[in-house]
Length: 353
Image 1: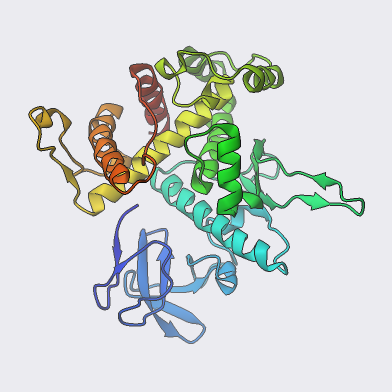
Image 2 (image 1 turned 60 degrees about the horizontal axis):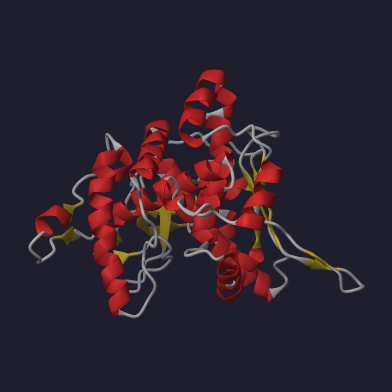
């Protein structure tokens, strides 16, 4: 994520900000120019200091404090490029659902920031009623007899379902511990599930040649998926899983290996952009420190190969993991990138580009 600033006063801004705390200007994000910009009201619409010459309006979800994205005022769209992918949102008359949905939207908009910067194909259910990308944000249901119908997070032909309970920090931590996962975040869920969507679009729908190239890296996805998951949950990952996989869940089936690797690729690209925005350099003061130096002085979204990303990512994670440990916190990036995993990340890099 890049670092934004208010064009009126120079105050540093976060992607989610809606008001400049320094000068009081209302703020909005314009995806076409990748700016969180200060706004001046013009009746019911706005001029943007960061994109003069065009009038803008807010996405309709801004009224619910769930979006800060802008749309050209003459557009017939009522929702922004991220929110128009929503198919179902939870019952917002429930205050808990409202709070959780806002967290979901924050994570989803962060996802779309990267997808748009990578110029990946994005079609919603209006563009493609059968296979467009859409989201259902649902909560568990309890019937009159107290029976609970649990919503499972997952993907099916472009439809991504997220259980809104994942937006509750305590519940998500409980599930992370129960599943034995080192890392579980809302943004991680979005990045993983959208990996399944892009497997469909960029591999399955591109014919046999694309499928064979993918199988050569991740294995044959025609293996029974249901049985593979049963075996994984019954037996866990193989003892040597870190030699070939980025996570234990990636060992379950080639589809999950692809989605986990896809998610980690997005983690890497987005975090390296943040490091670049803050001018972070890594130069360890030890005898072998020269082997662990990094300076992210390039746009990770436009990197020409995976080696450039990894050469900067590994030193950055060593440094931030060490800082987290100094604060008594878990590792920032608790994963090992073996040569086999880096090869898989290289495949994802080449695919996205």
